[in-house]
Amino acid sequence: MSKQYRPWAPEQAFLLPPSPMEWLPEGHLAFFILEVVRELELGTIEAALQAKDPRGERPYAPRLMTALILYGYCTGVFSSRKIERATYEDVPFRVLAGGAHPHFTTVNEFRLVHREALAGLFNQVLKLCARAGLKTLGHVSLDGSKVQANASKHKAMSYGRMKADEKRLAAEVEALLRRADEVDALEDAEFGADKRGDEIPKELQHRETRLKRIRELKAELEKEAAEERAAQLRANATGLEKKVDEVGVPPKERAQATTLAKDARKKADALAPRDDDDDDDAGSGKTQLTLHRVPVTPDGKPKEKAQRNFTDGDSRIMIRNGVFLQAYNAQAVVSEDQIIVAHGVTNNGTDAEQLAPMLERVRENVGEMPSEITADSGYLSQENVSYCDDVGVDAYISLRKKDAERTDFPPKTDVERTRFAMQVKLASSKGKELYPRRKVIVEPVFGQIKGAMGFRRFSLRGLLKAPSEWGIVATCHNLLKLFRAGGLAATTA
Image (cartoon, rainbow, N blue to C red):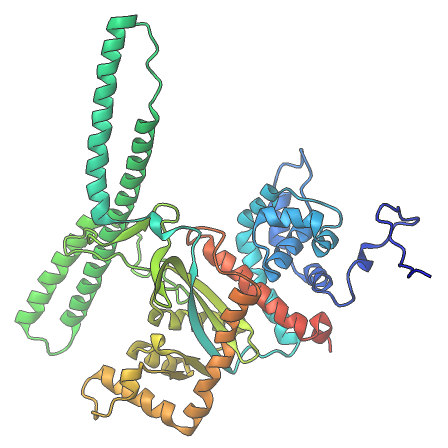
């Protein structure tokens, strides 16, 4: 007697329509995302959609689109084309979409237009994590990671090469135009003056387009360099003016400082004129991460090695594990339960200047400062240690190996005294207990984001968009932590 198989009839229609809720096992991540999206406040997105003309094709429900994007980022599906395809081929996406299949351009436009609102969901999810009992304060760790930009490093060009290529391409374009005029003259003589001659050769089109882009980037670099040098001169002038106001400064030095300050401000205004209502601190709030500064010459010109990328002009060449890549520096402050409590993105490859604004973001998101912070040697500076002392945060920041092993103390300079004090602090019993925990708090988070979630490259370009995408990534990381902690049921327990 032959073995009997279980029934298999893929073409068989259902007698009664099945519920999509039965397509996935109980406790699936898609059901959790569905629950969370129903709890989230999407008023900003709703208002933007309702402000549009009511005529025309009806938009997809904002909760549907939000659910697709959040689930996509949680599971490593970042491409709008792949999200659309998944609504046909992937059961969880089909369940979340409820039978709808938004076109990939619709998905991409929703993510782009509402990127700030989507990134703003971070705070709502953070509150859900706190309600579930996950730690958001106490001991936190700060770290940064270079994440590849949506651009190739081979599309970057230095200022020196821009100047050389501008001259070369301008000469080639002029030569091509001159040759075209000669050909036109010969054809006019041979065929008559009424022959069409407005077809632009592809060779000329390519050179003109590239020349135009080089000139645009060159102008941007020169403008930014002038503004950077002007800022330096104004800072110098402010320092000199403070010296004038100091008690006990000899009249001769006071007069000299006044003259130098006026000269500095005059040069700054010549390089980058300011409006009357400009403020020295305008746009530089406490939570603003420090951006990359163009290396400049004393006369306000970019240095020869200053670079710009043709594809994403805000991204920069950075080093990660000894490899050069076109990237952004993604920052995260993480609690002991591996919950991201603050996030940010900068095109500045160094970390030291990001500690203060990142801690201010923690205060903004959670309502108060953490009690302790650990960070690697990239964040050690006299300013950062002083800042942590001022705001009442107990900081444990490692030293570079050569500094940690120094024995030629006592220190002589303020910088050496800061490092020596941190060396002693790290060698204390509390330091030995606390600092090693950094490796199991913040470092695994970047591993989970890049390895488990698969986020290794930004999809959006520019400093207006990349930080919003990093906010979505941080939100989804916290959602996964909340899901594994018991989901929304844990918030009511």
